[in-house]
Length: 485
Ligand code: NAI
Ligand code: MG
Image 1 (spheres, rainbow, N blue to C red):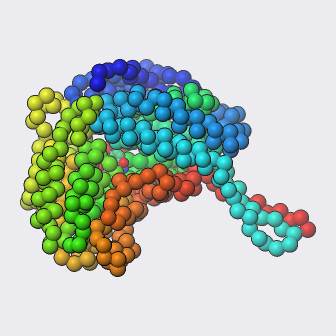
Image 2 (tube, rainbow, N blue to C red):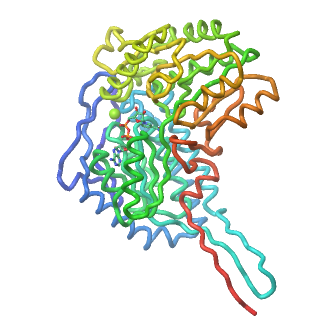
Image 3 (cartoon, protein in one colour):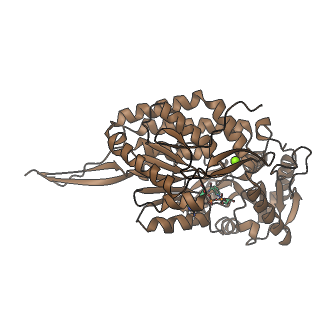
């Protein structure tokens, strides 16, 4: 596919594209070639202040005054208009992140799904009426919080921005987003499209720039009322500390080291298909990726052999050429994955497949990593414990269900888990004991669907995205008590 859409890296503030006040820019690299292909604005504190103040005006003067059904109608129009620009958005997403074009198309569909789902909820955010006896009326109202700040990562820019924007806007808030320096372009275009679809200017502002500058300034801003963050554990800790300066509530969706637990009676072909697809998707750069296979010794050899066979057939290539797997997002991310692989070798895990940067002809300058499979990984070792965020899968065998549980729950994360078995008692035991925000049985949702709540146990974070649950993040409860005796 040839370059056919313009890449505009200027910020989107108050309904228009703007450069940074400083005029500074950041280079944007094509991860498939390592070449500079565009620039984005290097926003800083001044740009953040400007964005927050225009969003405050838009919130007070406009968005707050719309009726819930008017908001719903605009969000339905946003969903429709995203659909009209599906090809353009997928093109930008594929180019900027490196992901296969078909995955980028699916990401646009997910973005549309978020806007539709929350458009439908905008006029159904009910309070409750609490019976206190004759002469007293008591009821609650779910009010918008005001300005929702959102710091977004680079792995699924369209999906993760829509996941936060749609419920925040549906509940009546204005949004100021800081998007990731490695993948800003699609979200900037999304915000523009939303404005064209009828979202008043200033209701959705998008700032670009470095995390330590623009992200820090946004999380430290006194006039934001809530902060949604998705990204790494360490940055999450930093953001939460900064937000504490102003008692700004946060919602954190951080890393994961999610397991698939395979029992002896599992449908092996199904689990092999699932496990190899999930770690290849987006080159493993998915917070909910299953990066650990915990497998019963009875089927261990068969599972490893079959996963290796599937992963060995994965075709690498430039995202827009629609390979099975594209490059990882940046040189920094590539080097961090290669470092993790070298840690794995040092721990004497058995490299069954891959383990290097791709040497494939034509891809030498891109950030391509071979699909990598480690067997007999030592429980407690670096690659078994740490989020790698690349196409790297670790296998650990077990004998008893309790051993499997100890391994599954033995990291500091708890985002997603999956169990493959048809033993009803065993399955219920596992789903009860696993510490994770989503548990799948005989499948793997990779965050699955717009309607089901998603979020972490332990250091995977707190608060829930998606589904009706997400509305809790973006509303606050007021109780009204009236004496009419
Ligand atoms: P990061 O957590 O630093 O970046 C995420 C977002 O936070 C970006 O928009 C970034 O600009 C912003 N940010 C960075 N420093 C900030 C600060 N001091 N204050 C406010 N905002 C700040 O993640 P990074 O460094 O890009 O990726 C490193 C690792 O993080 C990955 O290898 C992966 O393990 C994990 N990660 C997890 C994601 C998830 O979906 N849970 C998404 C992206 C990364
Ligand atoms: Mg990029």
